[in-house]
Length: 177
Image (spheres, rainbow, N blue to C red):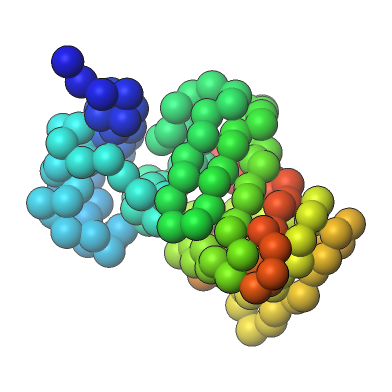
């Protein structure tokens, strides 16, 4: 009997494969564009490997889809990796764009680096508790409770939690169609 994580990985893998094939991309081409190994991508697609958040973002960008297109497609879905827990609050699909809303919790001192999303993607972060820094492009912004930042996420970016407390924030990602 498959464990829950394995079942979730199989669903993600099937979605990746379907999107890759719909775009006419070979396994090798998508792996190269995502910057991951062909064998790793093959294992993801067949459900033999559970993806990390970094891998999902890396694959989503060349497929031109939001993260929500790859993960469990229901509100309340949770992804945890590398000191970060992400809970999907809501996804709104409209003509012309997809808006994803997540509640994120980054452990004290943890860093979440994200590769560039697809062209035109924008992120907003509203800090609920704790403090940290958001780095994007040539800039960085220190944030505390109640602070907000909006930036182009089609470039590498990172969140850094302060050393003393978890950074808790609402993250909104808008992906144009």
